[in-house]
Amino acid sequence: MPPVLLGADKLKHIAAFAALAGLARLGWPGLRIWLLVLVLMAHGAFIEIVQGSPILGRETSLADLGADAVGIVMGLASAWLWVRVRRT
Image (tube, rainbow, N blue to C red; front, side, top):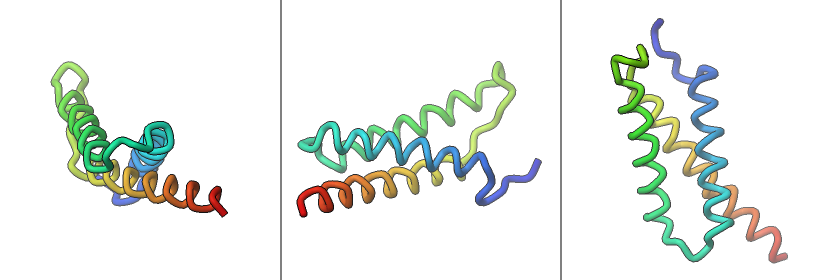
């Protein structure tokens, strides 16, 4: 099946990583953003590497990793906005 730019799979990746990033940022506000991004991107890369295992019968996708990155940015932006709105 050919990859779809914004199919359900990519939207699930975006939603999952947005939730992870947003909750991590709100839960650990003192954690450096670059470290949070690094850990979450490493997690996304690990998922893709595992999916490439012949045992699972799936394949890796750089588009999935890109969707993870979009989700991370959206989650961090949402957390920033949440904190900003709560202060007012």
